[in-house]
Image 1 (cartoon, rainbow, N blue to C red):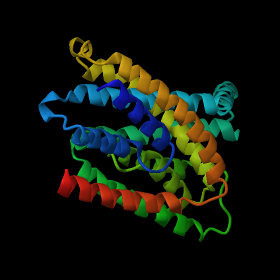
Image 2 (tube, rainbow, N blue to C red; image 1 turned 180 degrees about the horizontal axis):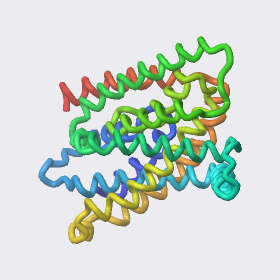
Image 3 (cartoon, rainbow, N blue to C red; image 1 turned 180 degrees about the vertical axis):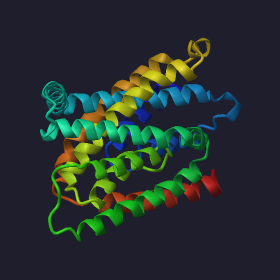
Length: 282
């Protein structure tokens, strides 16, 4: 991991985390493409450093979410505290907090058993390309289904939160876009795009925060961590956060007016191109 590679991947993470095009897939693609172009020998790779860097740039985009949705987060926390005191959970922000907890719980149940399999795909970009191809069809399908709703819901309910949690769990596989699958699931269940996107971003907070805090302590050998290029890792994290904030800002404006179809077609084409390149030319 060097500084240029870290900055480029930070930009990729910042752009792709909140666009429904799979940030993990694009990190896999850009990392492997960089190695192919620069003829980096496989024996010189530090997989632990790559996985840790992936977590850190996700932490950068998490900070972007926390800053952008700070008012929403505070309102939810205040509403939940009030609901605990009064035992009245009728407030929609308090219920939203419960739904985020429920969705997170479902995500953890599904993601934990498939996480080890998912991590092996970091070095298999051709397979990740296939998963990105599938994501494209999920996005197109959600747009097609959403057109059949005469009125779209502006509030998440328990059933929808559970299925969106399942979608987020499946997105442990690189190529299955977390934001793409969760927003698409919201559309399948009748949410309007803005509500689905807002819930998707808020639902990402507990999972990314948990992974960022827990994973390094249970998986990283701190003697090995001394050898990491920390200057590059921190630089990439800062870049991912800055780019991620701008991406959220403009994506929320975009999705309130336009469909996800353009992202669906992008995922299909990028998936095909990636599969062909890494399966036949790399």
